[in-house]
Image (tube, rainbow, N blue to C red):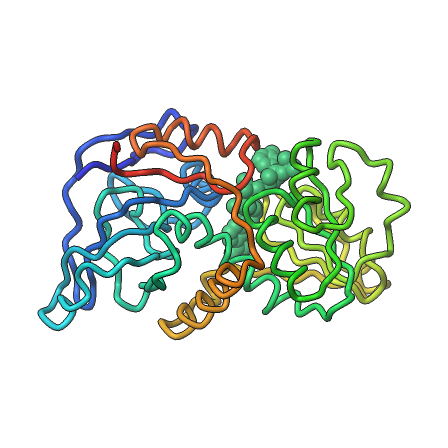
Length: 320
Ligand SMILES: NC(=O)c1ccc[n+]([C@@H]2O[C@H](COP(=O)([O-])OP(=O)(O)OC[C@H]3O[C@@H](n4cnc5c(N)ncnc54)[C@H](OP(=O)(O)O)[C@@H]3O)[C@@H](O)[C@H]2O)c1
């Protein structure tokens, strides 16, 4: 099968595209022929060697994809062949075929297409757990999202707005600011400037920060008893934080990794159905993804790292 892989950590230069053996199925596994594969920031961290990673040689990156079940490890599971599925937490996904444990399958409802599922999958489930497990915001609460026009940011904004929460945020370019405003965000500030910060300090109930290096400014935006939800470092690692100062203002920092919330088939099913219902009820609009062929994975990595993307970056396995 064709796959995108690497043997040493480093820049996008370490990525190779070529022929590797198809995965062998273990117990309770099915073989998924991928159509669209989600590229995520975590794949960049893994390629650089700065994030948890399974042992494998050469290493096939990626954890998210949408495709069709084409084989199964037991006659009982063969009944699943031809089903359309999504997975978001299965390693070695940058390939034409992926061995997926049955527990990690998310079956697609008829109304959700393969490209749509791959576009919304991991970022959507992340937005869902950030909003509903960590944010727990009441209607009327004011929240701020850094990098608001990123994939997670756009979906999180729309989920929160649909839940009655007032959403504000920051983005780097005019184009990105306008995208967030078009989704119903009340005000979007320039992340390249700081002149708006002082007037907005001590204002927000919750700040969702997936940029990382912005953590200090995110804490300042909170009113006393507010919380920052730190969930990623697309812009670089956060600085060390003075907890005594946080205590003096009863401010908190919560963190979370989606995988700790996808702990069973039932959890995946419940959470994906909740997410899909926002889409089916037109509460979420998905920005058209940027699609690269799997063989152009190196360019896709460089594009995602450049911060130019708006919304999801997908890798497509079939040429046509
Ligand atoms: N905790 C979890 O379970 C979980 C799951 C999925 C993703 N994440 C994290 O969520 C964050 C957002 O992910 P995403 O998939 O939405 O990514 P994305 O679509 O690429 O969005 C990231 C945003 O970060 C901003 N950014 C600031 N500095 C940047 C830099 N140096 N390079 C690139 N982007 C920069 C960009 O917005 P501006 O141009 O407006 O600054 C960009 O739109 C990432 O940190 C990711 O690791 C966490």
